[in-house]
Image (cartoon, rainbow, N blue to C red; front, side, top):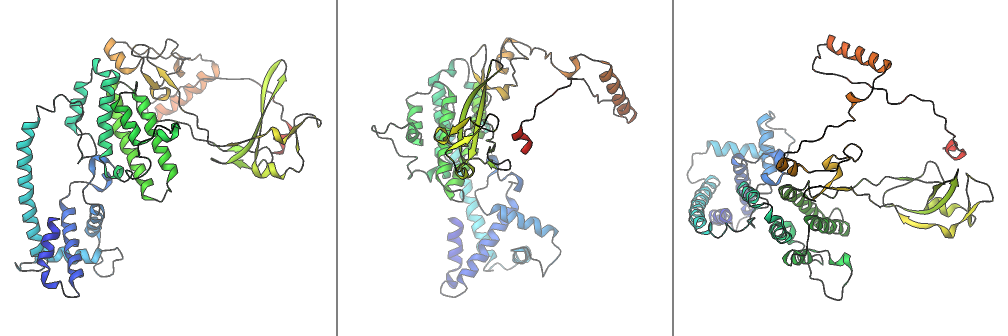
Amino acid sequence: MLENAVIFQKLKKFKNTENFGTWKLIIRHLLLLLHARKCPHEIENFNIFKAQCILVQCRHAKRILKHIEYCSDKIHCNEPYCRSSKKLLFHWNNCKNDNCDICAAVKKSDINQSSVLKQDGQQQLNNSSEQDASKQSTILTVSSERNQLSLAESESLSSNINDDSTSPAAVCELLLSVFRTMLSMQECVAFRRSHFFQPISICEKSEENQMNFCTIENYLKNKKYDSPWQFCEDMWQLFERISTYYYRTSKLHRYCNTLEQYFAVKMDDVMRMLGYCCCRSLSYTVMPLPCRGNPSCFIRRNGYYYYYKKIVEVDGKCNVVKYIYCRKCFNEIPEDMIIDENSDASDKIRKEKFVMLKNNQAIYETFVTCNICSKKWHRICALHHDGIHPEGFICEKCRIKKNITLPKNKFTAKLLPQNKMSVHIENRVNKLLRNNKADDKEVIIRVLSDCNAETEVKPFMKAR
């Protein structure tokens, strides 16, 4: 606002002329280039929340300056804004006229802005000493002007978290401060007029409608969450609803992606401080399903298909046979009965028994519970397998407190039994590595299986 006021005061004499808009664009272009010269943020770090510049056009100006350093074509360069930026910077570096219409406006804006910043800095230093005493009792300071935890906030958070502060009430207060910081973001303000921010009436009993920003905030205020995992699950469900409600090309969909990234980065730090692995909702990718009607036909993700399950007894064991057809192949069958290719011709299945389903059933990662603190971790984050560690899982925080060492894995490649073939191949490979001066590398070879297997290929598989 200050720069615009100075620019308009300088351009009063051009206000009634045709060149008023041109002069205004020239001065703003020069101001942006000079800001990009002094801005400490790098282009590679613009997607990280710790390195965001206030000006949106800063990254474009930095790219132009980077291009100008290596550009040798002074007349016929095809890069946008290259020639105009070169002329403006050359004029700024060589202009000695104090009454220049371009340089004088820019110099005045720099002087006024620096004086205002100095006054604001002195006022903030005086006010900060008075407010330090009131902020000592809070676990996390909420800042509406910043979009992330600062270093001082993270240090105070880690120092205040102990065994007594991990109660549900203290955890809800901590999560509420993180949630309010996210609500103060500019991307979240855009959702305030949507139904994702409206309070739910008493008559609405659908759980799907209750997952919005207002109800989650009420749950945190009333301390209804017993575990931070419940808060994370509600947030991920809300983000999923928002992303599916709006188009991918819309602004609100992009705002939702920004909020997801911010929430994941911030909550990961909070969850690790509380003794958990992360805050992510890990799931396996939904794979395409093969259609039984046509070997080259597959049912893609979010595609509809017809499904029927049949239990068959073979050698006293119950086996489940699944019949999956896409809608096209299912409708092309002329009869009302479907013949099972793997059985007799008399064995038929009615079309009425098939159920239409959607290929969107995600399989989520399972959890393991710590034997000491009873906190849940993702199995993949804990790298725990019941066959390798049958005594149970102990989290890293409890191992450090109790001085418990991680038990040795008995199923590593080096501890597996050897035979003549594995010893012969392993010695030859390691000898070759030593001859090629790779002494620090070692290859371990074991024979895991050596058997003859016979399988019966059914006619349906042969056709594929």
